[in-house]
Image (cartoon, rainbow, N blue to C red):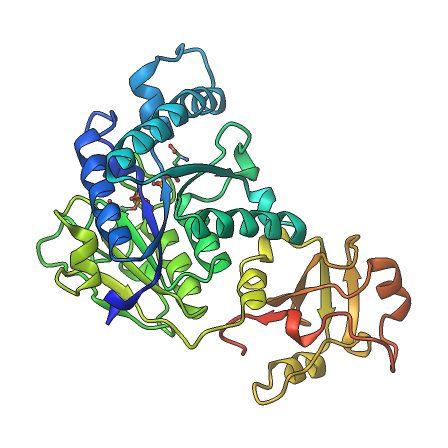
Length: 363
Ligand SMILES: Nc1ncnc2c1ncn2[C@@H]1O[C@H](COP(=O)(O)OP(=O)(O)O)[C@@H](O)[C@H]1O
Ligand SMILES: N[C@@H](CCC(=O)OP(=O)(O)O)C(=O)O
């Protein structure tokens, strides 16, 4: 079954790569590299999203106690990323494999051109049998410009590359139905796309060196599964975990994928945070867009308000009369024209159906 995946996005979390004292766990990285090499030998494409820059930075230098949190992270990540990628490169080498460093920021997902350039770079690396090793560019991604964590980044790349599966390795066996430290808690082995209420059993508590925590992983995983990509969350400290997950030989959490969405829609689905404008529609327009049996574009006649300045190709957030966001789309023309056509009949669609993604609960 899952062993048939051709393209796999592997996310290795901070806690898998670090020892309890925060220093890098080199033996663990070596074992993971050996597992990736084994998958490559089977003809699979593997893209690695690896945390660990800060941990490596910590092993190489110490920061003055006077430095603020942002500067400390910048310094540790800038120094540590060099060693992190050198470690991967040195470990893949003896397997006859070459890896590449790809550092990205949230901004790279904002604009269709950046996005396509990035996608092209991944395509050319994969076509040449190179293993992309991706991390956030922590040096320039600070505060509000940061991804929530590398899980968010991994989800975006999995959908951008239309991966068959996203494997998230953390320091727990999967998502538990209670506190993982409680002996009575059990790993939830399958999560469907309609499951809600993760907050009831997943606490916001994070592991020692993790950033986002399990709750953000759950939300991201469900969104990615909605796009037709199977997501597995497993323990990166288990021996041969990759093979075992793919062969269904280890207890872990699997998010069941929904039928596949188009590539364009996969990109749009993740773009809500990057919208340049907001479009409010009336109830009739929302109902028409949400009728799943028909492909309907958003016409100016159903629009009641437009905010923000945007150009053709920019991302728009769609909100209903209660100001609740229900979808995302790409503008067919800029805000000036859109304002002129607001509420008018017989005008060109502001968002074409092909460039419209509605939140799963309304579509
Ligand atoms: N119900 C739950 N199931 C599994 N883990 C949970 C749950 N609730 C909270 N957690 C915490 O989430 C942590 C993993 O998330 P995170 O810190 O982001 O790790 P990573 O660095 O691997 O991304 C676990 O170490 C665990 O402490
Ligand atoms: N980019 C950072 C890791 C950021 C991060 O979110 O890590 P994780 O908690 O593993 O998802 C680093 O390389 O140290």
